[in-house]
Image (cartoon, rainbow, N blue to C red; front, side, top):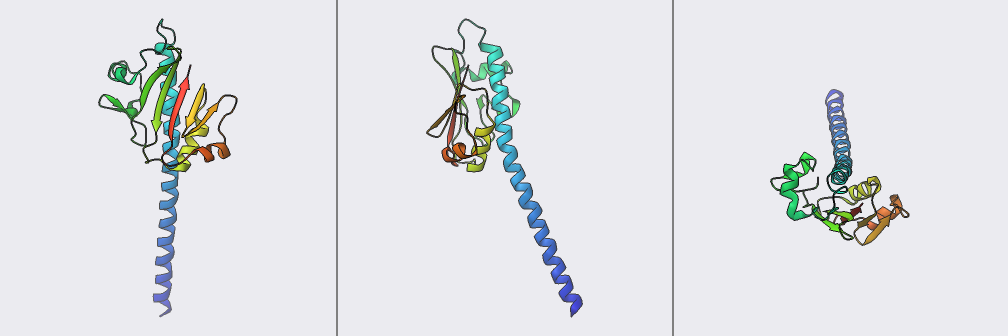
Amino acid sequence: MDGILGRIVAIVLGLLALVGIAYAGYNGFQSHKAGVVATNIAQLITNARAGFSQGNNGYTNFTTANIPAMITGGMFPTDMVRGTTLVDTWGNAVTLSAANSGSQGVIRFGGGGAQTAKQCVSTATSLRDFVSLAVGTTTFTQANLPDQATAGAACSATASFTLTFQ
């Protein structure tokens, strides 16, 4: 009887350990997604600055309509490209536009409900080097950068991001 009880306890403990490992892996994957989004957006900004900021038109041609031509030119991280469109890590469409008479570029992403509020906070606090960053209805600037509290108040699973850069 003791042998059977011991085996049952061992099996239960083994299953609990597997659940713990699976949960830790899931959380790590979710945090990784936010990091990939921030890295991809940073790379996109760097490439856009190299490709547009020195031209006479500035970011005027940095538009969603020109995404296919920019894909051909290698503007975007490869994991953002789906055919002739751009998507973020959560599967949401990424749109591009120019602002302030072409002197600024604008990137819109997120907001499709596939992200978690925790991923939203992690992404918001990881993005840097922007003129403004709107998360949902809250706008951050270099004088007012997002932190855990302010990003937490702005974020939700459906919050979209609008990042303006120069």
